[in-house]
Length: 115
Image 1 (cartoon, rainbow, N blue to C red):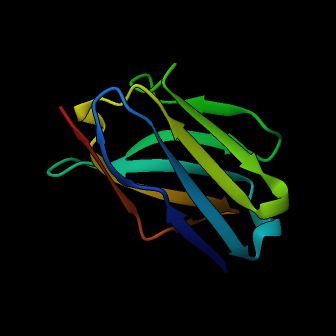
Image 2 (cartoon, rainbow, N blue to C red):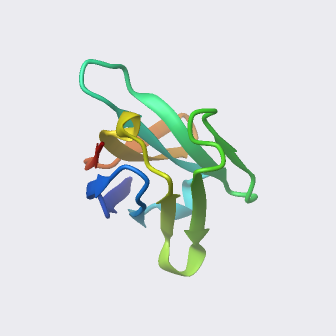
């Protein structure tokens, strides 16, 4: 099993920045992809960014150039640096880790961007 704990959400003004963290524990050796998803009120959960075990990354078009995903292997932690935040970035952000055919989810952290 993999446990994920997110932190770093909060309230920020448009144009501001936040950094989300996701600390993984448990069977972390089995993880091949970690990433961030978000779900805004009344909308489906959507992919934001992923980082693969080999280091490759991908981003949703809506966040390219503004968000950066990174990881610290020594701390078993993945980060999402979010810059130039917009009101449409308001959502609950979830960390996810894929190991084999299983996806593990964190509890989510609220990000609210005021305009």
